[in-house]
Image (cartoon, rainbow, N blue to C red; front, side, top):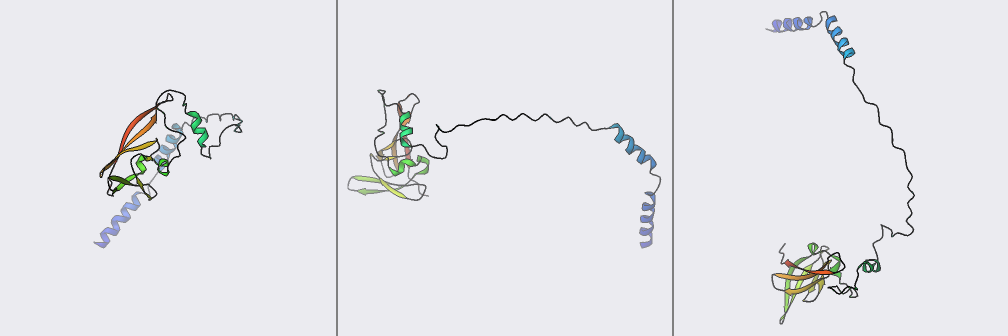
Length: 171
C-alpha cells in the first residue's frame, strides 16, 4: 500500500511539470486586454483664510455668568415670571432626572422628603423648597411621591407652569 501511495504522488507531481506555454499565453493576453481604469484625482480645494476675532465674544471655555443669563429674560411683560432675584438652592443645579426620592421624615404634621442627588448627598426638602433646573417648587409631599411645579420658558418671554413628580425610589 505504501508503494502504491508513493507512486500515485509521483504521478500527480509529474503531471504538473508539462508544457505551460498555453497557460502563460492566456495570462499575458488577459492582462493586456483588461487594463484597470483609475480616475484622476480631484483638485485640492484652495485654502481660504478666516480671521476669527473673539475679543468681543464670551469664551466658550468659561460658563456664562448669572448676569448674562438673566439679561436675556424679559421681565417687563405682564405674564408668569420666575423670581430671578431669589437665591438658588444647591438642588437647582441638578436636572430632575439626576435626583431620586429616597424616603420621608415626619415631624408632627410636617412631612419632609429625602432627596438624593447624583453625587450621593441626601437633602431634606419640604413644601415650598426649590429643586431642578426649571425653577421647580415642591407643591405636595406624600410618603410615596413629590409633586413639583416648574416654570418653563415658552420662547416669547413668558413662562408656563408644568407639573412634574418624583416617586419613591428603592434602588
